[in-house]
Length: 126
Figure 1 (cartoon, rainbow, N blue to C red):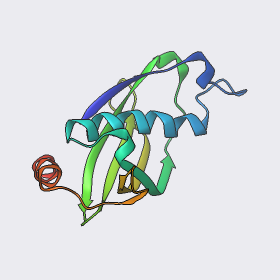
Figure 2: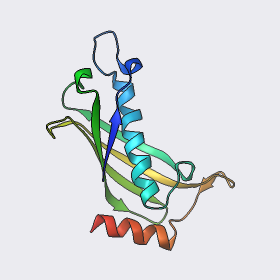
Figure 3: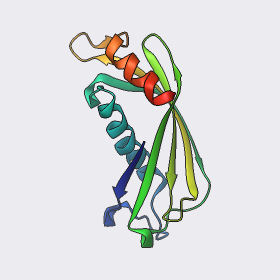
């Protein structure tokens, strides 16, 4: 799934490009939209691990980027996503992988993936 993210003036650092820490926010916005489509709300997951590879700078002249999120692995209570940030030409500028754990906010702990969530996630992986 693709999600467009608007750049903000505050995203720029002293070098005049999008700061590396902001990239995590862009990825999160795309991931949250993707998870919502699959019935998982923002407060229902936590990040267990992340790996981010920067291919080249994100130029503020683009004004927006596209975040793509796909499912790589599906476990009992966790999943792994493959995420990319693309420029306007569709070129990958950032690649990332996130290990997510589904979360029960009331119990403050992990929870299993529901049958409905699993069916939706398996459908997008196919």
